[in-house]
Length: 133
Image (cartoon, rainbow, N blue to C red):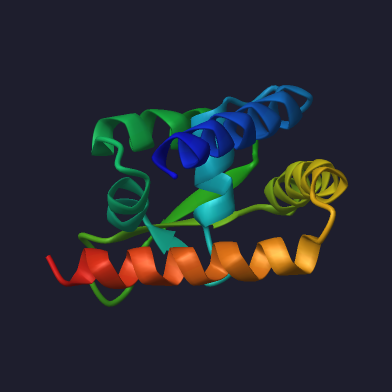
């Protein structure tokens, strides 16, 4: 099972990387865009979730910010916290990449709903096991 998941991850990463190139963004930048919620996401949450160093997150966010794909705001409740938000352009790019990847995934799965249910269940169990550590 490990090998199959490794291959699935490699293929999924390739799909997202291919779709991201059309918008001149890297895979890590695309993953940052995917994880930013409508309410904004703190930079520390992004680093923790993606398993990247804060300096790597900052560098990628600065590049996306220069292109007006996202923007940062300091929290009014805790000035140490900086939240990242998608701009209208960032939302458009994020949706386009996600839709293109989704289309490829749907084409490759004969029973898309069944596959999606299994993946959701596995992710839920993996998240649960992470919290036990």
